[in-house]
Image (cartoon, rainbow, N blue to C red; front, top):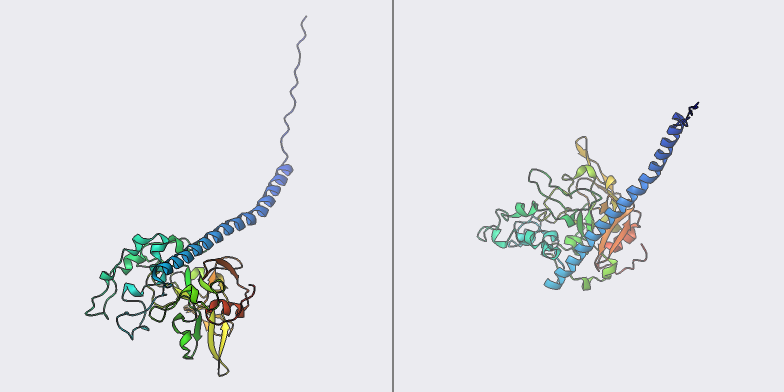
Length: 343
């Protein structure tokens, strides 16, 4: 008689609810620990790209100088054919007075954009006080990726004109604040590196403080909620006139207690820059106590800790938001003759 074998299968044991909850909790903790590191790595990459943008701009400046024997001028208002129109508002009537951002395009491998406008598109010589260069909008609608910091925003046209902007501004040195002091060296960027068109010219070799000790171009402060409306972000990148859209200041000169007083204007985080709230612009005070609203002089960025700045020698440095105002003043002036030290 055959005896049948009874086969017994081992019982399959699953996870208990408590074990699953523990595993999920551990995974959540690991993600929470990992996320800041991932975000930091991404910001490091974006800051590196921003630094590279400034490096390319600095090289373009130097190549411009090699070609024209001078650094590009910043911009101007009005019409260069009318001697007394430098202070006209609010942009240049001719391509000649467009911003430094436009004039360095051939040295950023963007000559096709530069060629979209010519001097032949300027208003006629017989009536230079009317009209604008007919192609200024066509150029403004061209996007230059190098002019945007990836930590701040994605390049996109703004407003009804669909014009692009720039996240970088030239160093115009010292700005008079409040009542006019009539310091001619403070007018038109003459104490900086980027000088107002028709005010003067300079070369890196003529920077008295040394090109490695002087800011040439840096990031400009812009509140994330103020893009396209801030006084330094409301004009075309190619033709903003002598304006905060294309130039900024790291030094100020203000009458305090009856005496002209120089001081530094350190960079600020974008989150601290002015914005439009409840029908009015908020204000930001500089170290002298002066309050700035929609139009302000500050360099700044969306990076944690500081701003990238291209020095006049072509190197790129990180300048901390906590830099001493006196050091910032010296870094911004090209002719003060004072040592910088470490920063």
